[in-house]
Length: 268
Ligand SMILES: Nc1ncnc2c1ncn2[C@@H]1O[C@H](COP(=O)(O)OP(=O)(O)O)[C@@H](O)[C@H]1O
Ligand SMILES: [Mg+2]
Image (tube, rainbow, N blue to C red; front, side, top):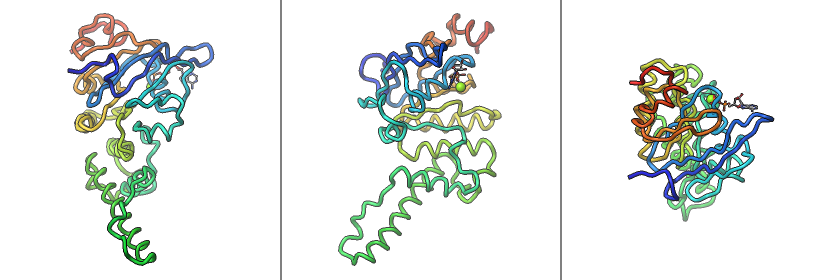
């Protein structure tokens, strides 16, 4: 059984407030994500979804409130320390180096995530030889991690392709792989299906589904087909506030949600 109240959840946002001048973009938002759960956040344009992601990832500081992951208070931590604490976010392609290959993008990501060779195998050799072998072994380990990430997102056959020349959907897959390099406990996805056709959307839906075995996911997405297929829990954000939170069936059948967000027509 899953619950998003109490202290059992992996990730908590409590009483978060963010003002931009006179505008309250985040208005006392509380939500929780359990391990192994996909929590989707939906709401009309301007509702404050991206602001919430920016507060969680550390791009903006909240005026009030607390963010905790696996018992660690992230609120005072800068972005890189949040990543080290287990938080990762997709940056919608902007994190991809477009002029280098898929493999090199992933190598950079695993390298900067502190992929380390254990070193035990090279003990007892001369220092020069140890350094040589150590570097070689470390390179092999990093490469293996990079290849594994590519395979995980379905880019195993595209290692030598220049990232910027990949189709849009594949670039999004690479962006997810980069976010996975730090082995997050919580993955933030801000509109991963944006700009995708139905085929790419479907592929991304399957990919996200496979990720939830290993991490909790906070998914912001306009594609309601994907949201209904993936979410264990949905929260609806309107004018910076959580209007309601519930299962897919709760949200689908909620007349207030239909009126405010989904239009008055039936959501099948
Ligand atoms: N950096 C900012 N400075 C001022 N206003 C902002 C900033 N970021 C977002 N906003 C405003 O906050 C509100 C919520 O925006 P946003 O979080 O982008 O909504 P959503 O992602 O749900 O479309 C909007 O009115 C937007 O104009
Ligand atoms: Mg947004």
